[in-house]
Image (tube, rainbow, N blue to C red; front, side):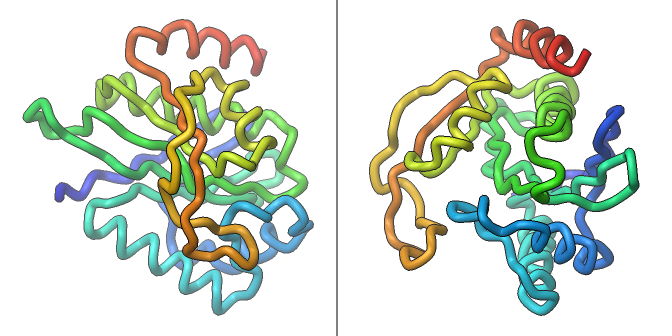
Length: 203
């Protein structure tokens, strides 16, 4: 599998920078602001566990499976979470992905319900559709995670349906057991309208 370059993506509110072990301590601070919203998402709370988490993502990046980012809030330069490209598929014979998923996203409590998630998605989507020329971008979440599903719809993805026993659960007491997944996507023909709507939300 190809290993893709990790870009630096900068907006007005957030900078998405290639994840590194140097981010571990700031990520731990972000993760422990308030852990009540992490019922569906793996967000390590200790330095040791965060280091293992980041090292695993970097190994996956080296193998070409993901492109992980730390999310830096520009107003105070604090690292406030993670996100990534994953499930990058090539089927047209080119050097860049034809399909990609955006996921593995979490934010510190102070960064939730702010423009950061909207702008981060705009940066990721723009890179996927305008630099890679993907034909499809997917976003998946646990079918029971209504907060995440609502957020995915707000950034312009369309609900496609429920994939039964699709992935392992991250919910407490269910780690690794099959979960149902809510599938959402944006396709290339929809991107101009989605882009305009995201810019309008950030204006």
